[in-house]
Length: 377
Image (cartoon, rainbow, N blue to C red):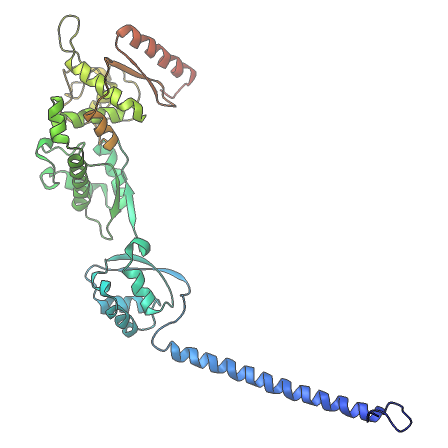
């Protein structure tokens, strides 16, 4: 019989109580032992982590930060900069990690995306991967801007002043223009997205744009293809700038190019050269931008860019055309058109005609749209 029962077979309450008290004591002792062990382990782990991170952090970092590496900074300089920003624990750890990474000898200056409390090796890995971690500031110059409209955009995007940019433009001989530009940068500051240096310089920024024009002109074989059309590269670029100003739908651009060339080569009924008579060139001659029509007074202005007054093309581009417009000027569509008009400025729909009667019909459609859309023409 169990010793929990007395001689009469009844439960021995005293023995049960004793065993319960004993069990509770064991549980309490076990809890104290476990709790003390956990406390000791926790403190031990903390001490271990402190030891591990005495010279270098471990883990994946904490808070996102940006750090700027100046031009000419040595590995030591970089380490000190990163320590100050709390990215790496010690400069020594950073230098050691950099020594193990061959690409660290070509770290680019600039601003990088980092985290605080990064292992030194992780910080180095970010610095040698500018495509992923370098913060690149860019300025976008859209197609079709004349220089006077481009300057404030460039100034805002780079942090330069308009005076600084205009001062650099005053000496076009330093811009890297092609000979056929005749020392005039209009049309040769190629529209694109450009990286902004940490300490931008106006001349350097403008030269990047003329260098991009040179690259595009070479890729399009502008000089030779212009000659094949019977024009100079400057004339073709001027045609491209007119296309850029006149239409924005890709399908219309080669057709406008053909209409311009047809008009340049055409004759009036009395045998005189046919004038281009383009509002876009008149707008440029009057120092304006962005209008669809011109006034009688504007069309009377004395300017070589007023194609209502002068024969042939204006002396140079009226804006900076993009690659699509240049390609259209070099590869005009086949056709007999000499007129075109945007009949729906909202959609850009353009209609072409080979006769004045057909053109008048298209102009009437444009005028009807303007009447129905007050203030948009």
